[in-house]
Image 1 (tube, rainbow, N blue to C red):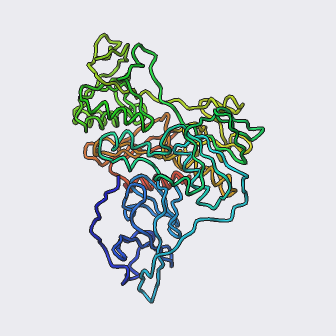
Image 2 (tube, rainbow, N blue to C red; image 1 turned 120 degrees about the vertical axis):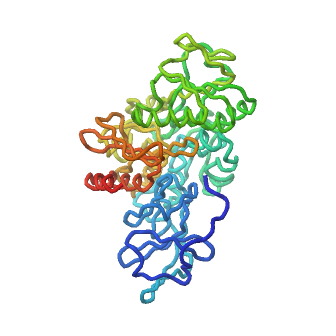
Length: 516
């Protein structure tokens, strides 16, 4: 998360200025203006000036990547428009400041902070927009509609109080006790009312009627729409074994789930985590931060090997074992008892607390009942359209992913947010095909793994660098083409590869790898 303590200012005072001739093309220069860190970025004969701190978790934009007239954050790949400061791609939701630049001879200086407005003239103006699901995709869609100037009614219907939250944090800093409560809501109280977004949290959607362009709520209330977004997300799977429904067995998806785990963790004792998924391992790291005894039970021979490959799997295992996590591989739980988990190999693991991390399933019941095409997700086109005036985004959307070329459903927070933003633009007639390269990050103690692309299967998996030294990239290829990349300590490479893959530039992909 962002560091609340102000860091010392570095670089030139941009109120006085710097030499234009010393600004390198598309290379951010870090300086300061009126006690705030500021960047200068030269593009040809033009110079842009923006604040230097990402509005997501406070990442250093000076260490980011300039792509045309945008800058990308090295931490979690948020993107900002250099000309306006607009947060054009999640996970950042707030803009960065922009400044007026004055050039006199060879001197470039900042004159003043700009006033910005991101509203635009839109070809389409839906009579109203209804969004089913108030998670990553739904909330991002609602916000983008307002950012671009849409003034019609917006209804954001969810069923998870207190409303949109920073879900990735629920298994990371918040669960570990390193993030305060106020960091978790995506927006402060009153934000949605201020933006004239009707946030419904106590009346679930019961039915959608695409032909009539109506949505029915459980209470009997009916909502008409000009455009509909389905963003119902996914729900965590449980296990069909005895004892899985006991009070000391937890799932993790919502803020309430995370709070329940925290409450139980404060009682101490041993914890068993079933499943070596990203969620399971992040929970393991967070509970170790709370000094609990943690054992991970996995049906696999290595954690994450099916997703990240065997070398990364061994690295992740070693990392967790160095922090005191115990693993039991190649077995499954047979039953959960009050004080232990009985395993299929005949052994047992003591546990006063059990967390299930065995995957999620897309919530597609509403779509199926409405006659939309569903095949392990709602089938959508490249603009995320499932039917006339109906869109789907996030964990439930099976879309044509451009890197792999496959119709794919991806369960990433950032992808869901960008789906929502893209759907909003398309509703207003200013969108286009969704071309973003998938991205996610996973935090394990002080190590962050960044992953771009999508590789459900690969022909080769090559490690470049040294994982144990925290400086490595894992390259996944299919038919010799790079389809995904996982990095530890190589943020610039991750950004460059993301941009090249998004552009479909295989030569640039290979050049970035050679240069790293």
